[in-house]
Structures are given as structure tokens and as C-alpha cells.
Figure: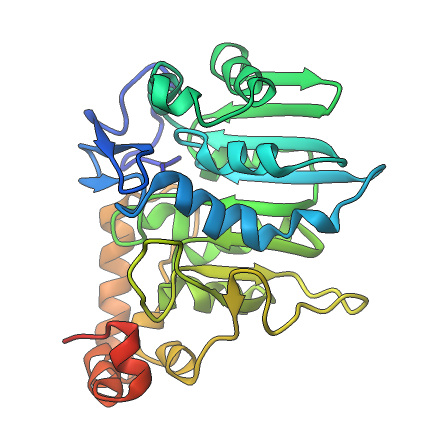
Length: 322
């Protein structure tokens, strides 16, 4: 994961909004980074590459897009580039129309300077990533891409007004660390950018995030764990803009329906959304606003929800604890 917003916003592309970046190894041998500003790693310790494949490339079902078609992708928080690179590596026939949003130039720069990262990708994918790093755009026989630098809340509005995407990859830092990019308003704006049948993919399983996506009119599925990742009740979310012609299957590669436990989660205080009405508030203000709303609401506490499921077969396999 990466980030495209920073407390206070207004960060210049040449600044260091993510703070010190420390290289990290992951269990599958792929490179990740740790952000000093957010005090959080970019990826699961199970593996940066495994996460990109299991949570983004696999549930995207790229085989749906055949020769002569155009796959339209928006990568929110490009970071080291894993998610889009994994898609590009698996993509065969369709032409790619790609957009990316990112705040800090350093993660992609550091990744491309690391031999172990470069060895993961075919040369054409590396050339695209290098072009994004140096020129902010790429174009070749397989398509074209543009990377917008800055706070994603503002750069999202800079995309062509008519643009609608088949895939949105949302990989910001966690909602508690970076609520700016998980607010009701930002998620609604992303949902509006989906074409019919378009999918938003994210590692987040937070009730606040899922509630916002559902209110935005999207159909949801629960992502399954990546290889090597511990078995939990969910590893992320697939949200699709309904398409009556091709409804989203209940089960698919890397996903399953939300369980009864997950549905009940959406009726607890954890589901109170992050709100950022003018798309410019700092993280502290957004968190404070949500905390006050949680205190006032009459919804069930999240701890009560947890206690109800502890001891059940689903709760045991899901890793729910107090």
C-alpha cells in the first residue's frame, strides 16, 4: 500500500510526505517499504508480490478482456508499483488505458533502484514504470498511461470528466492511519468513476469502508487470503458497480460472499464512516469527527459483535479475538 494524501495536504511532489522510508523484506522475498510518517508498512509481511497478485490481479479476472478491447485502470496510490505491474505482466490481448495517483515520488524510485524488484517484471513492464518515474507517462504499442502527482482527493478531479474505469486499485495506508482516502466522500467519488461492471479492489475489510461502498451502490464480495497469509475472516474487498447483463458471481477466483459475521459487522459502531465533506480536512479532524459520531450512535459496539462470534467455527477460523 502507499498513500496519496497527507495530513495538512498541499504537499509538493519533491517533498517527503511519507517521512523516512525504510526497506523491508517480505516472506515471499519481495521488497516492501515502511513509512515513518504513517508508521506502517506498504504491504503485508506475507509478501508484497503475493499480495498484489491475490488481492488485485487475480480478482480482476483479466481474461474477461479480450483482443480488440481496452482495459481502463485507475491505480490509487501507486507506491512501489506492484499492483499495476502485476496486472501488466498478466495482461495479454487488450489495450491498456492506465491512470495512477500518487503523492510521493520516492517509493517508485527506490523500487526501480532495487535489483530484486526489477527481476520480478518483464522488460516492457519495467520500461513503463521507468517512464512513469521520469516523465509521469508512458506510451507504447500496448496502450498509454499517465501518473498524476499530488493529493488524490484533488488529482482524482483532474482525470478526464468522461473517464470510467473497469478496474480501480485502491491501496492507501490503512483507514485509521489515513482516513482522508477512505472517507465516505472519496469512496463515493471513486464509485462514480466505475463503468457498469467495473470493480474496485482493496485490501481493506473495514466496516467503515464497506459501508461507504455499499451506500455508493456497489455490490461486495470478500477477498480470500493470499498464499502464505494467515487464515482470517477476510483479506479485503471486491466492490462492483452492478451490471444487469453480467451480474457478479457469488464465488470467483479469490473471492466469496460476505459471511453472516461480516454482514453483522456492517451494523456495528465500526461501520460509522469517515467523513471529509470538503475533501480537504486533516486526518486528525476526520478521526475526531468519526469518534464523536460513534459516541452518539445507538449501534452495537464492535466488542459485543466480537464476543458474539468468539467460539463459533467461523470466529475460530477467522482469527477474531478480544
